[in-house]
Length: 117
Image (cartoon, rainbow, N blue to C red; front, side):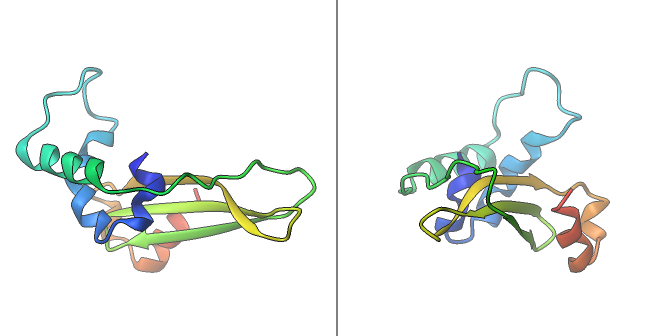
């Protein structure tokens, strides 16, 4: 849920960085207890006011647009947008993930392309 509302929280990428470590494929099946920085980040993000979600239903007859973003060697994200019958362009999907240590060395352009994968 934090991924959907992150654009409404100032400095979200830096606040959520300790939590991004919990999305690694190398973690055990049962997650360890949160450390102090992860717990503080979670509490902060949990208390932020968030608007009602605005994801629309995907429509077969409309074209899609893909918006991508790479944030300061922390994470990449992409948003799938689509024009609705009332001509408003709304998001129909959103994905975000943290970068691996190797990916953090990529150029900004390469990270933007990586977010499309």
